[in-house]
Image (cartoon, rainbow, N blue to C red):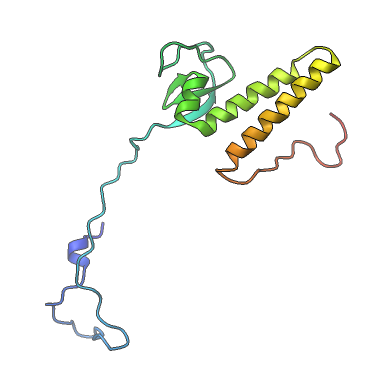
Length: 154
């Protein structure tokens, strides 16, 4: 690794043979040594939130110890499963993704009258607008094509 103290310019050093002398067009580098870089560790101290498929559905939340984590996609804090509310509080972006999954699945499994389905569709649309406003803070929408354009089958 480069030693900052030894590699910085020394105004008291005599130039070695063949070295270029400073010119008015190109003055000698600033003799003030650069500050040493802060030590970095490979593991950050910040908590790492992820979403994974639950190995053990219904595990108690590692953060609050009250809620169960559920099954399917579940939030994790480092390597421990957390409930949806703790994920939403710790990582709002990932928490909203799980909330969106929940709302979409609830709508997909809904049976009822046409009026009830219309009301649910309006709620789904309202949630989609809320999610879009929230997600827009982290970047533009990504279009993911699940089917080829010429594929008309469902």
